[in-house]
Every structure is written in C-alpha cells, then in structure tokens.
Amino acid sequence: MTADAPGARPEDAPATGAALVVVDDDGTDVVLDADEAAALLALTGGLDDATVSACPDCHSRTLACLALVDVLDAAAPHPRAGELVALAEDAPTSHCYVVDLAADCRHPQWRDPGFTEWFAVVVPPPAGRRPPRR
Picture: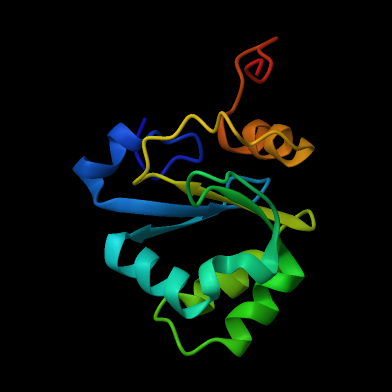
C-alpha cells in the first residue's frame, strides 16, 4: 500500500514524503507533504471550523465539505487550496476525511460515531471486517 491510498499507514509516509491525505467517499484524494500539511493546518486553524469529528491525539478527522470550502476561502492562500476545494465540492457525500500519515496513532481516544465513518472510508475493509473494538 502506498501513502497515496486512503488506507495508508504512517509507516508508508517516509518513503513518499506524504504527511496528510484528504479523501472523499469515492477515494479521490489530495496528498500533502509535511510542509504543505503544516502550512494548511497553520493557515486554517487546524481545520477546526470544518471538523465534524476528530481524533484528539492527531490530525485525523472528518470534515464537513461545505465548511472546508468556507475555511479555505477565508484563509490565506495555500498552494493546494484549489485541489482541496475541488475535492470538497465534487465529493459524493457531505463529508471528507483527513488521514494524518505523520502520526503513529491508532486513535484510541476517538470515541464518537465519526470514527466509525472515518474508518469505513480510509481503511477499506476486507469482506466482513468491522472497525476495531475500543
């Protein structure tokens, strides 16, 4: 699996330089390197105003697509903002998902229903697999 894949793991990140992936339900994604990710998070207040649900220990989260567009429009320019806006506007559902590839996090404190939604999208299950029990 490469870091470009929605189910990418932190151990995949060093080989590709990927640090953050924003993905929709169809698997369309925008992959950001460490510098791009840091700039995006700094310019958007950590994406907090677009966040529906988040892991408290890393930057993985579920975002409201319309709110993401608003946050990006209100923020200072980011070189990948156009791609992120296009992803959010074209997403098949009202949510998109952030995967923090730079963090070695298994999300043990992420306990709201948003985790299950995020997990179902970013970690494509083999037949019959369910999210991990907490």
